[in-house]
Image (cartoon, rainbow, N blue to C red):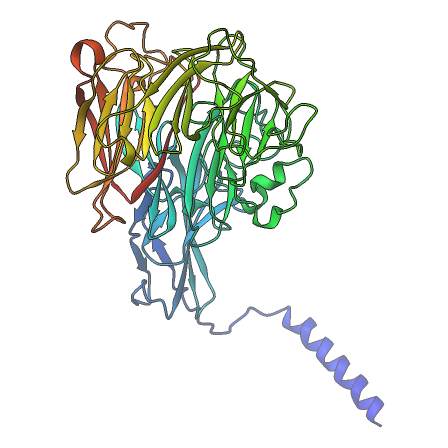
Amino acid sequence: MNRFINILSTLLLLAGFILGGCYKDLGNYQYAPVNELRIDTFPYGMTVFQYDTIRLTPKVTATIDKVATDDTARFGYRWVLGTPDSSATGTEYQQLATTFNLNAKVVVGAGVYGLYFEIKDKQTKQVFMRHMNKVTVASSTYEGWLVLSDISGNARLDMINYVNGKSMFTSDILSGSPDLPKPLKGPRKICYYPTSNYNTIPSPAWVDAKGNQMAGGKEYIYLSTDQGSWKLRSDALITQWAWNTWKEFLIPPADSASFSPGFIGAGEIPANVNYIHVYDGKGNFYQRGPLNYFVTAKANHMAGGDDFRAAPFIGRAYSSAANDYAAMFDMDLKRFVRLASSGVCVALTNPANPLFDFNNVGMDLVWMKTMSTLLNTYAIMKDPAGDMWLLVFDVRSTVTQNVKMKLDFPDIKNAKYFTIDKNYGTLYYATDSKVYAVHKDYAGCYLLLDVGARKISWIDQHTFTNYAKRYNGDPASGTNTTNLEPFMANWLGVATYNPADPDHSGKLNFYFSKSFQTEQAVLVPKDEYSGFGKIVSVTYRERAQ
């Protein structure tokens, strides 16, 4: 019986469909209009610098439900930098914010992007979007001074970037590398080294704005801290944990987990065209050759002998004859040795009528720098009595000795910082608050600068690769070497801070220093920049010609 009723019901239902097809639909249906959110058109395009803040306030209206469109209880928001092509919305490079108003730092590489703003109605589940197809992210790290500061013991990297002949300040660059320790403690050194070799081995190779690996760039940038050292990508100055320096060793050092090198490079000069070095802070140097890793064998090793404990200085001339040779100092035997291109050291043979014994100096090394424009290595020494000495010599080819000079000058025993003028050979030394000038060939000592209650934390006259004496931020800057003053390559940099507020009072001043012999090395103020913490290291990110 049940089976019969089911069959009858099916037949009646089928008949209803057939008959219904013969009549017009007379039903009374009501369609509810959809509540839409309309986002006003964004500007066609905009330009923002890397690490700068992009700000937008969207204008959004609802077609029916007049609710506040910035109501986070009802709506969700999302701002994204992606591909300029709105049809390829799956490619996302940075999520900027999840708020109604956009106020976010841009950390992607330089390039052209699309900006996407998305609103989701949590009640209706509808999603609305507006696209801007040309957001140009310009490099804020293109060229200029890289400044590493100590902020309450933490590292902060800033940059004075030169754009179209004007300077702009880019702050806290390391925030673009989220996997670094936060906070990153113990800033030591920032080093920029252009070389003749492509930066392809080991990573990171040079990449384009979207992260695609390219043929390579001929430069290396390293950051050293108490918590480790990293290579920075040369275009956006970002890094990641995988680019820790110990991973650049062919065989990782034994203490790789806590490897914190004191610095990487070639001393206070640009890298030699073939070699860079890493100093581990424990008396060991490792040398890296062209297109190679840092080798595990130590450079502080005597040929046919043992390792020695090296002082943290490499006296290597850059771009000069026989530049494969560098000076190193054995802290235990108090001797200078020569590091050859083979990666091991040999004893130095004293010249005829030596001014001092290379193999038994009898003093401790305080500071050393090779100034290639003067073709000499300058070494500040301290004898057992606490007196200071200047030794000047050359180990590049024919070994020579130029000067042994006692530095019997005001405040010299309180000196903390030293550098050499590449033009006149003036030796600058600085105490906590004063900068003095002396010269190996002329009598006298001149007080150049007194910063009063402020304290000095760094001085140097930077050695540039392009046009050592006439670099001014423009690689095509002409050939005038008579008037040196306009060129920043000839300026002395002095960093100071207020000890009552070291985290916010850092200043970086540049001066042109005149001839010691004729004008008493008088300092002429050139540029001043503020907004730093206690500055501990400064280098210059150059641009190739």
